[in-house]
Length: 182
Image 1: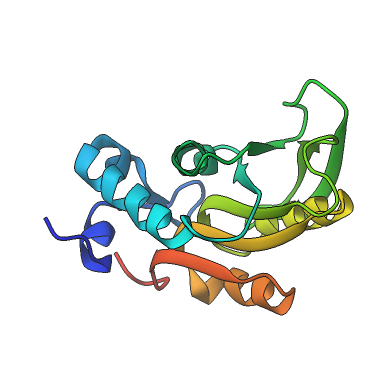
Image 2 (image 1 turned 90 degrees about the vertical axis):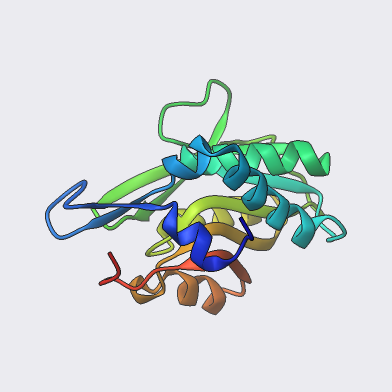
């Protein structure tokens, strides 16, 4: 199997009407069930970032943890976990954000980053950009800067990538889906 955008798209399962009617959920589980597909996804990110100038990898709760931890391990970079509210045990910084479904809070350990750190942020997908924008605000509150926001999937019609770029955050995704793609 040759890796390309088409082959990755065929392994992302559309789940209509989840978590609410009218939404097509993009399920990356099949990518992780195929060792070959997971290797191709990871290798694509590794090739992109192997010589890039950043100090830390951040991963979003929860699916961002899956790919972010692999890339942190492979590139030998520290991993910073951004969690949903109430999941971290030590002192945290918290940031509210809007999701497609309502308001939520993102938290990170207050001692995760320092001034001068550069952070590559991973999530499984970019939708409205709320989670990644909240993470970027938290990164900046700790004195660090965002190197790039990376994901497996982009849903450009929801405007998240554009919001991130408008906020001065470069984005990269392996593939994109339009809202009507099944």
